[in-house]
Picture 1 (cartoon, rainbow, N blue to C red):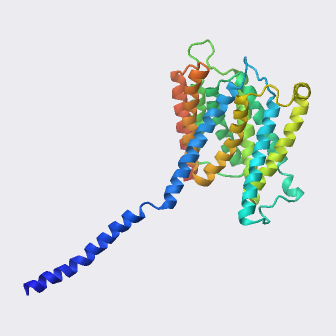
Picture 2 (picture 1 turned 45 degrees about the horizontal axis):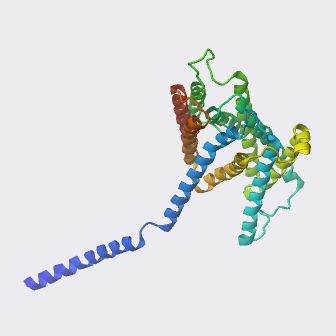
Picture 3 (picture 1 turned 90 degrees about the vertical axis):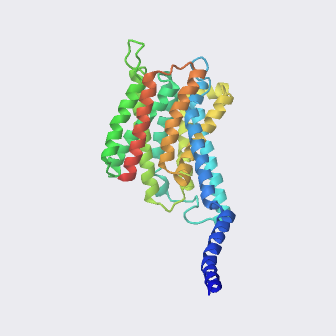
Length: 345
């Protein structure tokens, strides 16, 4: 009887222990899901890329100046940015055509009614992109990184007006914090002028924010009008019109300089890196939407403001004041709150 009881107990315990051992073996053999690991790596790479591109954008523009002026034509540089983005869109489309074939949603042949909507955002982006070169006559690189976040306000308000999307109370509070943070970061206690950035610089920053917001909202409305349309096709037509408008800008502003001195006169390695940076920044933002989330963009923007300030200390003798640190912190918090408010809306 005693032997049978012990044997029966062994029978009761063995299946559980076998299950436990099999689970342990499975956990050891399988490990983390490959998909999750790949997704985490992609998300990390996108975050680092966006942070690097965002922080280096203003630095490269300022660094490309010689004796306080641009030796190259900013209109030709802007044209090359649009051309490079257009080429990258075509490469992406070619890859899709090889793998998926040519379909109604990814073919470039389209109607006049569809293409005719792209000149408006292309013209807005042209003015905004050219202004970002001239604003550095009044704003330093860290100040630019702070002030360009004003486009969050313009985008939010235009979302409400044009797309009829409601804003949460958290988002409205974030707008107020953002204005307070931008103003605090520009305080200049060591001078008679209250703010470091002159009035003209603020006006240019506000115009850039309005243009960026309106162009972004308009472009999103175009994309959502035909959601099945491949994004690379839509980007291609946007960049084609961007190139066309930049040709007009070159003729109006820099025609004599381009004819007499050449298209690439004054270009340097820094100028080339700046053009590549501008082209890749747009692609990085689209990759964030695909492989990451809006929080990644928030963290990247916040870290980029600090990185730009620290690098500017060594390259341009920027004075990292307490006002700038506090202001950039408030701006980072406001961007985070705006993102949270968008998720909770």
